[in-house]
Amino acid sequence: MGSSRTILVTGAAGFIGASLVEKLLRMNEVVVGIDNINSYYSKSLKLKRLKLIDELVKESNLSKNWHFYKKDIKIIDDMRLIFSKFKPDIVVNLAAQAGVRYSLQNPPEYIDSNILGFFNILEMCRQFKVEHLIYASSSSVYGANKKLPFKENDPVNHPISLYAATKRSNELMAHSYSHLYKFSATGLRFFTVYGPWGRPDMAPMIFSKAIVRQEPIELFNEGNMKRDFTFIDDAVEAIVLCSKKLTTPDKDFNRYKPNPSTSFSSHRIFNVGNNKSVNLLYFLELLEKMLGKKAIIKKMEMQPGDVQETLCDNTSLQNWISFAPDTSIEKGIEIFSKWYQEYSAS
Image (cartoon, rainbow, N blue to C red; front, side):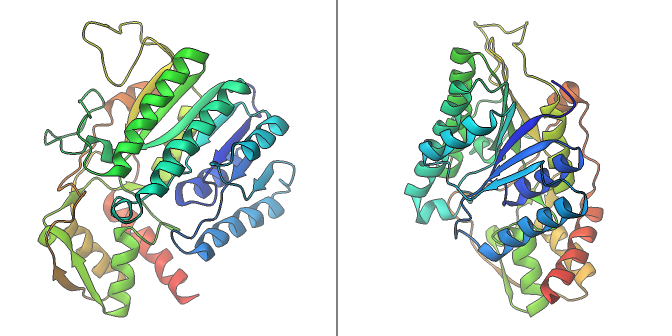
């Protein structure tokens, strides 16, 4: 791969997608962004992320490096036109219908976006001979597993939400395409990514908004929940490092005792987390401290589809690309809280 690559990023107006686009542009890569700007959460937040990218492009004279299309990965003809025009070296698929709880309310959207949409991306990688596909999976694939920390070679056959099932399906689909059509594919199981410009349906934004407005916060399972929180900069760094290394077949792969995370084909799966499980009550305490207000807590029962605890083992990714998370939960919440106060005041 040369010093300047063409990288197509789906979900480019999303939380991780927009941060990744900024990082790649600063690296002088040519970036093609795709996003349908749907209404799952505030369109204005997505448009503000895109505005920040446009400002960076203008300030750094990168207009030839940035190409954005408001398109939906579910429409294969639109995807074919974009792939045909740019012939990307690398595709980073971050477009998906997110949210465990929303999958209980609107399951068809998960099949349309996460299965059909992902299939279209795989087809384009096949047809246009993409060198490397990197795609977002999720820690939710570990489902009902109780053994901690979660490792990539653990079985993941018992998802407890449709969202998790679609993400596991993506891993299986990517493996089959990688094997049949001989391109590298890397699946990244992200663990609760948070930080500035994060999604408003996730705990940091929900909690912060409620604390500032002095509204009750619903703590499910009466607050007895733990999550491995991953700061956005660390998540983006993992993607960038993976983009610089093609996946290869596992020379030690044993078909009699197959490792679920590697393959005889050029497909690998990695966890991306912080290697620490944080109690939601401690997480809330940090937000209270940084925002200068006490939370009003309403304890609730566990929600269907939720898991009580997640904890990531990053060993495989560290061995693969020398990745190590660099942001503690304390530092991450400090950075997020400062941003949130400025954002909510604007």
